Image (cartoon, rainbow, N blue to C red; front, side, top):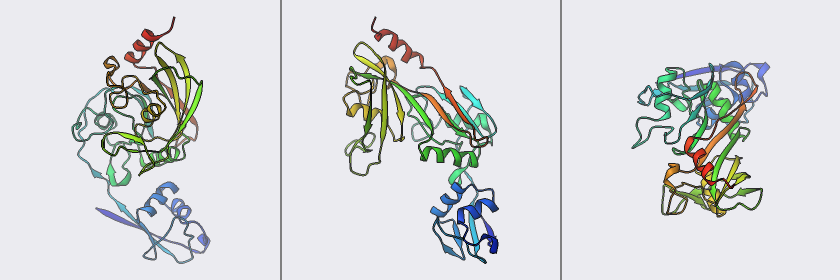
Length: 305
């Protein structure tokens, strides 16, 4: 089901950018307007326009609004480790082993199932689908902090910050070997593996720019504890980048050595710090969470005395 919003431009809006005009006359943010233009859901005088279009006196603008549809996700009463919550968003600490979004083979027990129960109807519905505010994701066996949007305006603001790389995200990882330099950068494009579609690799073919900065936190017996700050957020980015420089993550069954460290229950990677500008108050807020138990136990075993 769709609805149309019609706006008429008067002389006072002459030469005003279309995203400014719409945002001033509706509840849409400028980012939302630009997204609608890209999806060809905004027209002027029954013609498609670009994001840089400037309004003219007498223009008739039409916005196609699609009603959000239920994607059939079942709400489940699963405990959530909530670090912060208000009317616009919440920050949760995802445990290792939990999938973020339902998919084939993981239809239940996910973070989204838990959010559906906790948030009820207070969730964003971007792109015409009711989905509980998932602005970004982390891998199943990566633990740590995620921000979830409760409404579309918050979602758009947070998504814009991720796009502009202004979100502060720090990950802690245990990697194989002695990382000699105290800090370093890995700048290499990431794309899907040619033969194994579940894996990613550094490639120039159908890839996306990726940048990871790392600092050595502690040197262990055969391992190094590092913290990584992401400029981009590609799938498996830290795991692929660290493998590429000869230091795969401990416990990683995909990118690590064949004799995987099973006691870690997956890659030793934790999203420990998350900071962003609140979409409503405009204030910068930051959160940190401790390493999971298996991460901490492994660190203590490997500490050089």
